[in-house]
Amino acid sequence: MAAANLLEFDLDGLAAYCDSLGEKRFRAVQLFRWIHRKGEADFSRMSDLAASLRDKLGAVAQVVAPPLISETVSGDGTIKWLFDVGGGDAIETVFIPEAERGTLCVSSQAGCAVGCRFCSTGHQGFSRNLGTGEIVGQLWFAEHRLRARLGFGDGQRVISNVVMMGMGEPLQNYSALLPALRVMLDDHAYGLSRRRVTVSTSGVVPMIDRLRDDCPVALAVSLHAPNDALRDVLVPLNRKYPLQELLQACARYLDAAPRDFITLEYCMLDGVNDSTEQAHELLRLVQQPWPGASALPVKFNLIPFNPFPESGLTRSSAERVAAFAAVLQDSGIVTTVRKTRGDDIAAACGQLAGEVRDRTQVQRRMTREPIRIHASVPGRVL
Ligand code: SAH
Ligand code: SF4
Image 1 (cartoon, rainbow, N blue to C red):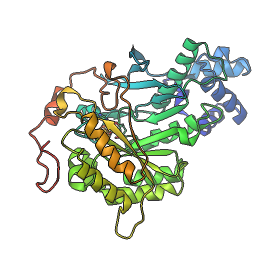
Image 2 (cartoon, helix red, strand yellow; image 1 turned 90 degrees about the horizontal axis):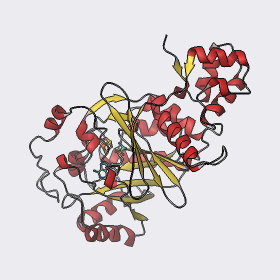
Image 3 (cartoon, rainbow, N blue to C red; image 1 turned 180 degrees about the vertical axis):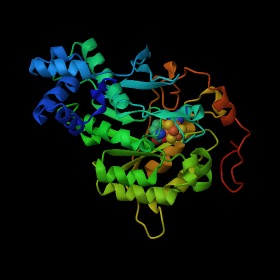
Image 4 (cartoon, protein in one colour; image 1 turned 45 degrees about the vertical axis):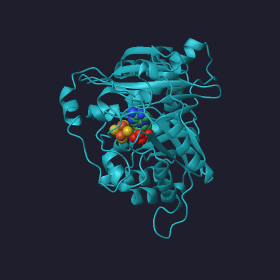
């Protein structure tokens, strides 16, 4: 029988596993702390566990992150790790150091089924969901590797924020995501506050409600368009969950959210979604998202498009981004423009593609003939 990977478990899961070995819950807590707080993978070094338990674990369990393929460090200090998740697939994890925080951008799937037009992961197609151990493994690996490198002690954390903004749509892998979030938040593990863990979604409406009920963390919604006609093209999931339904789900989420706003991400695509008219349309959308509704409390995060060869799209100029941002800011909505980090190592948003196998089939499918947006929609033909 394959050894159980203990990174698969949140604390309750580990307690259940320990119970199956005839061990009490407090043993699971000790084990959990060794693994996540100290980064220990060798049971024989877990000195306060009974020798019999250490031996037993050594025979039936292990603590392993996905095998590392490469580490690339950008000129701005951003680090990108590529992990092998088997079957010719790789996933990427990115660490972004800043003065006041260290953010880890974590992947949830190998590839992605949503297929957004401007996203390199989407162009790659969907391979498979990651397991909880593969999601947690990215954090476990990164935190402890960086701590060792920086000479940090047990109590000092390097990663202060996690964003589920790597490869994949986290809310299409909910059953693996949920225990992973619980590990991130658990005081016996990483102890991150709910405000510092962000799930970013392209808008899987029923799962936004599930997340609110099960484990509300900060929510970012990838909007990218001020109306359904354009969003249908850019984010195909919009055909299933159109804007009104999505914004209603955001409003429901706010009842339980750790922050009193939803972050709306908007990737700035030159001549597609970046005109000041579209900024005004966006304003109207959030100020009255459905008939009779009051304004939705949101912040905008404008992301300059990070180009990749197959997209056929270009980044909006700094002037167009500034003019778009000014429309939103002038109406009192907090709007930030995301700094592009790590683009010299293809670690910026939407550039993660985990290139390991020949994906020409998928790419041929994705670079099909141009789609025409309905004539009344501002924006050019994609
Ligand atoms: N699937 C989730 C999370 C991963 S994508 C989601 O879509 O929200 C994380 C963010 O990167 C999203 O806001 C996404 O729209 C953005 N993104 C994708 N491709 C991009 C690109 N080429 N340039 C800039 N941002 C991009
Ligand atoms: Fe998937 Fe997000 Fe990329 Fe869209 S932007 S294809 S949802 S990873």
